[in-house]
Length: 427
Image (cartoon, helix red, strand yellow):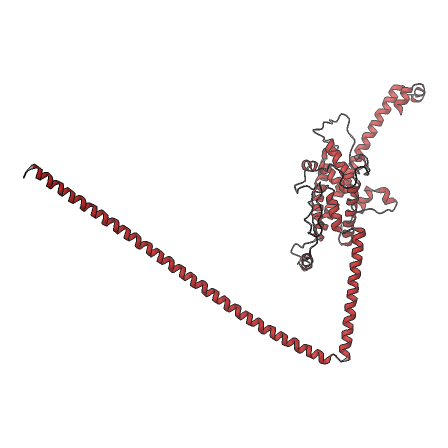
């Protein structure tokens, strides 16, 4: 065999092997594809079986629900038919006995009671309208005081029929601290024309507020913000603020007195207002100026307090507790009355003692207890501050007297008659 023939036969055998190799690969691919197709078919078959079972169960539930609804409807119809038959029988029996004297007398008595109830209802409505027009309701008093901008309470949303414009001094609810209280100080007169509002004088008119400054005290504005203090004092001393606070506190006093188990604070009020007590005048349970002093104490303690001691800390703590209870009560009073509130208030009357009832009663009791504690701390601090001021004034008078005696040599009257400078120093 020649070399060419050998080469040709070798090439033929290699070609045959490559074709066999390709055929085996193709068969393997076909087998893998068939296996994958069979797995996909099995998966789809199982999913279709699951969906079919779920659909059958849903159809069974729907059929059972419809059957139960049909049974319930049939039972309601039978009950209504029986009730209708009973009413017809009662009406027939009443019609048969309507001509008796006993039935006539019962009907006349029922009509008299019904007419009496209608007359009392109309009279009560007229009296309520007159009271709301002349004296304002508790909610109106609460909203008026909130509009002054002094309390940290937001106006509640009003019904569409009576829209109330929010106050410009309305502030967000946040914890009460001297920093945020001074930042929320109103910068304008709450109500009324600025030209007609009469200022009530400096802060020295406030009961118990220590406005005297010790000699040599630092008056730097960074430590004692006099501008913010004056703005806040003017806002609180505004006639509209005092009127609204006095009216609201008088209404709260009437509500508290009508309740039982109230704290007796008559001795504290007699110490605080001795002249009125001796004259036999009426001592208010919640004096407006004493109440508003709590806002001054918490807003600017560095200006109100001459010193920072135990009495001042106790007064600030009691004032914070009292104002927290008051603002919770104020927020509840300012809520608008809806039609659903009647059912809620009637259902709350049946609440057991172990639960927490809703309404103004618990909030009013909490405010009155906090007020008694605050008033006790206030009276103690006021008399201690008055004693300190008295001792300071006596010290100044003694120093002035010693200075005059040192200039006159112990004989002040003749020397004063001869010297105009000594007369001026003695005045």
